[in-house]
Image (cartoon, rainbow, N blue to C red; front, side):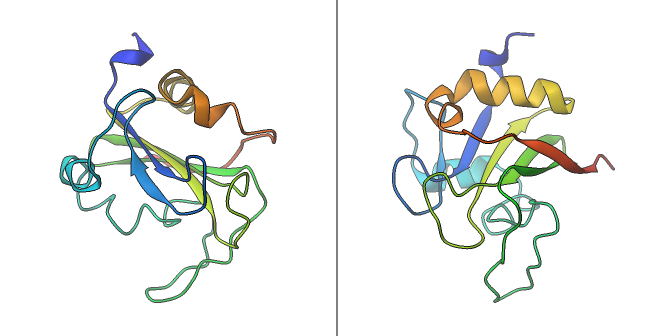
Length: 137
């Protein structure tokens, strides 16, 4: 498999505070175009820390966050999701990075897909990304 051929999106901060959907490095897509490609079970709202490990979130509440780099991995409606606490750009509590790829991949493969398609984002992670939850149902 060529990691560059997988449909994948990133939800989080690029170079400044504020969490948004992003297409792979070098591509630009409107937020609504990405939202329309991802199933409602993933976005547009649950992707905002709802897939992080133990997010302590309830509707209408701000997530508290967790240790930076603590990750959760999910399979949801034919998509793979890697989500972890990330304060590398945004220091506010509950900041996260989430990579969403069409297809059911393993954790290690999902990491390689994210690195291959978002090298500018991935290169800023100066902390270990550690799998602490897995939901493959």
